[in-house]
Image (tube, rainbow, N blue to C red; front, side, top):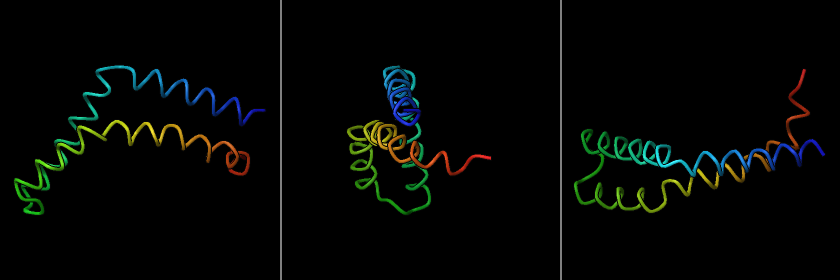
Amino acid sequence: MPAILFMVLSWLSAGLIFSQPAIRQQISELSTKAIDRQVEKGKLSSAQAEQARAAAEKFGVVGYKIGAVAGPVFAAPALPFFGD
């Protein structure tokens, strides 16, 4: 029962967090800054950077949401083994 409660509360918390426009904007800014750093280092061309920005805009928050949903599913059964 505690594992199920942990998962449900984690999912509700993630839903609340990702419903905030400010959080989604911060995630977008982090992606953009990371892409800009790759361009500055010469690891991405301008065309590749534009493709990466488009992909980040489309899938950026989705990746965090997937992690927020899947993380508790794996963490809940493992937590009792990492206690005191």
